[in-house]
Amino acid sequence: MSMPETRQPSRASASPESERPARGKTEALMVNSVEKAFRVLYAFGRQHQTLNLSQVASETGMDLSAAQRFTYTLTRLGYLHKDAETKRFELTAKTLDLGYHFIRGSRLIDRAMPYLMHLSKETEETVNLTVREGPEIIFVSRFLSRHVLNTDVIIGTRMPAYCTAPGIAMLSRLPEDEAMAVIDASDLKAHTPSTTWQREALREKIRRAAAQGYATAFEEVYLGDASIAAPILDHRGRPEAAVNIAVSCSRYSREEVVARFSALIIATAHAISRV
Image 1 (cartoon, rainbow, N blue to C red):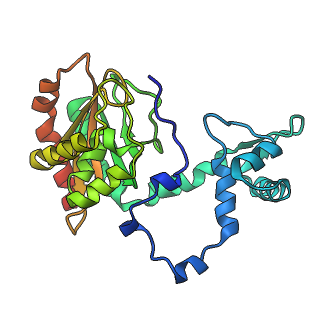
Image 2 (cartoon, rainbow, N blue to C red):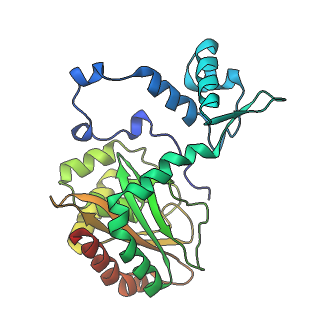
């Protein structure tokens, strides 16, 4: 089963209206050339590791002249490399700089780090920290175990919130209408035969997670993968992140996952929330 591709946030995955900046005067502050530059960078990915100028124009919706200006500028700045023989562009390692500065400067990651490390050592299982952006979760910290199942999941990977334990855990601490607005903004589909993707079934799953204090997902994105997560709350009591433990279904039954890890994951999330 292939993983959902790490991708650029799309219009469909934009934050709910309540989370967006107010329109009107703020729209006049939008610098379109900056948006276009990021559009060029996001044109590259797993499916398009290298692109020629025509492909950049096609992927971004720009004309050739604009694509040439942006690729030239980004190459001069060091974010793109142009092969002298093939004339194809690719991202450079400099594009990692923003992610590096985010990780080093994130108060959330700084607060959570000692607790994630402790949980990883105590359980000897893979531990993740995720945040939500619209209908997706993003992995922002990850401690791997020797039992790791999915090496494709790295920091920066995006997954749908509706079919992941961290996503459901975070949605469970939102008002129900807000949580369902996120569900309605999602591209609901079955990634595996075990994916919960029907709207009312997801409503019940969110309610159950709210009552339990944790959420689970068994083989909903990957076959063989089990996950249990709890929400991390900010000072207003709103979910700002989630911590989860990921294990292999071949090593634990559903009942064993809950019995062994639910109290630990809740305690860890509560501890981070209080810092």
